[in-house]
Length: 143
Image (cartoon, rainbow, N blue to C red; front, side):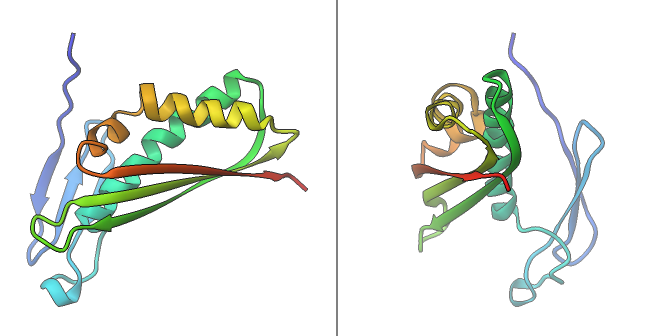
């Protein structure tokens, strides 16, 4: 059975909007001052990259836990390049997974990333239809 998701978005004046997710989480969105906003929230295209990082990050950390990897820190850096022409979609996205832990197995990290981007992360699957997607990872030993 298909999963349905719904969000509600309310205009707050100017270029400001507040979005409420099914979970009850509230997110503010706004445009930059140069585009008529007040810089009082995330831009929608920033949220798209945040969604990508959250989706694949949850997958990778879950898989690493199942592989009994001792992760003590985890960051994702996402760099997106947009087209010059409207609608200015992302054309190139690079995700860097920065994993810190004790005695981490590089093969376990690589496989966790691979599973996320090829099987589990729906945001990745959606974005790869318009953008060239790149992944890389760094492993740091915990101090």
